[in-house]
Image 1 (cartoon, rainbow, N blue to C red):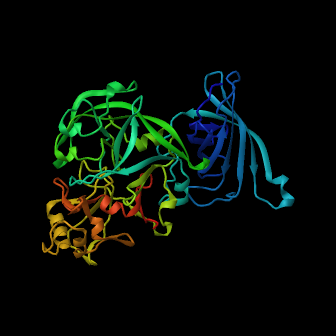
Image 2: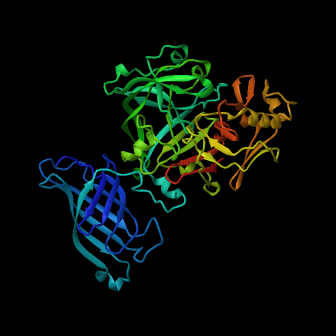
Image 3: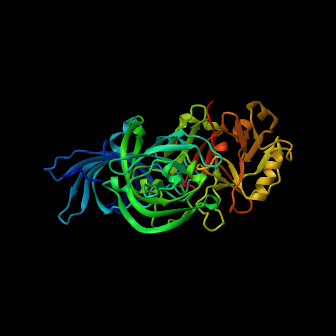
Amino acid sequence: MQYTSLVGTWQNEFGSLMTITYQNPDSGYIIGTYSSHTGATGVYYVIGITDIAPDPNVNSQTVAFSVSWRNTVGPTESGANWVSAFAGQVQVQADGSLAIATTYLLQENTNPADNWSSTIVAPSTFRKISDEVSLEASWSRNKKYADVKDLAQMQKIAFGLQMGSLSDNGATPWYAQIGLGTPAQDLKFMLDTGTDNTWITSTACTTAACLAHNRYNPQASSTFKVIDPNPTQKSFGPWGTMTVIIGEDIFTLEQIDTYLGRNIVTTNEQMNFEVTTFYNGYQFQQLACDGGIAIPSPYWKSDGRTEALMIQLYKDAKISYLCASFYTNKAEQLGECLFGGIDIDKFNINTLQWLSLKQVQTVGLEYLWDIQLTNFLVNGFPVQAGITDFVLDTGSSYFKGPQDLIQILINAVTYNGELPTYVTSESALSQYPTIGLQIGSQTYYLQPQDYFLQLSPQYWELGIQVLDGMPEGMLLVGSVFLDTVYSIFDFQNPSIGLARLLS
């Protein structure tokens, strides 16, 4: 039998359902969930392993898995301390369908004298009823927020972040080098919670802004496909527009298997994205990256032509939870973004707070990650700027907002214009106040060294900037704040986690 994927939904003779959401082709490790129809009413974890190199001359692939009968989505039931172990083999049936013929042991917890009577042995056969794993299949929807220790153990995709040059265009200096195409072309991507566009500069664009970057060459990739050749205009607000076509190719990524001790293996993911054929302007020209990978919020709706990489990885069982976490270190100019989990060694777990996600009411901006900002403080005093939406944008560096709101903040920080919005010596920063962001139960303080951006050896610019087209009351913030915290963008339980970095 050829090696077979078990990912999908299986049903046994009692009507119980097992959904395998992830299978590692290198280790054979599988995880999923189980829902019983024989008395228990909850959803239970499944963990197991299957043969990665079955005998091709025998119609069988061996598999073993266990179920913990502790409910993951509701109140604890009787029997929560029980476990079941299944051992069997996957076989192709006469009609071409797949079945797992198993013998299972159900172990009840007892005192030593009752050991044998606490064990039930019986056969059970699971038949595959679907290859699909819906986004909802493995979610613990009744949990308010993700369990931190669970997130630390999840299967993850890792992106090493590097810090490029800062510029006054307001974009993030952080990018990840990722292979695209076959053979892989090494390109720089920002990982961006502030957009729904996944795009890359291509050799079809010959403007000065495009020539300033490495460009993806579709003709040099044997796996590139054109999905929609019709040029489309994508607006980037005050930056201008970008002309794109829709293509498909393979992203080369690094997958972390924490169950094997942060073992990193290479994996490929095929998906649609925007191939840029034209853009112009100094803002585009100064970008540290060659393209962007969108991390839209749960309120985003795909247009059907392009996809979000994190969601696609989940559908293909390469991550087992839908979240993105960020750690950056300006001093070392290095960082890491993880799809599917967190690195618990990067932050103080006692400072982690989860913040409910708000849905942006402005049509076309539903993809933004919006939370509640209680107060914007300057030297401890609230600034009455009318901030109703506070958006965390990993694709940005500055604070950004509409003209009236931003002018109020600039006036507060510069003491109504007594101080300039730029300095030419680092010592001059000491004249400026401390900014406080009162979010949830905590206040995060930014020193002038945090919210001024050094654009050259002797020039620092205030990181508070007007962005035309922003809705009234919306304040967006990027690396000037996000570089000071560990951030978790939780798609499955719509929320954002913020924690203090370990010193």
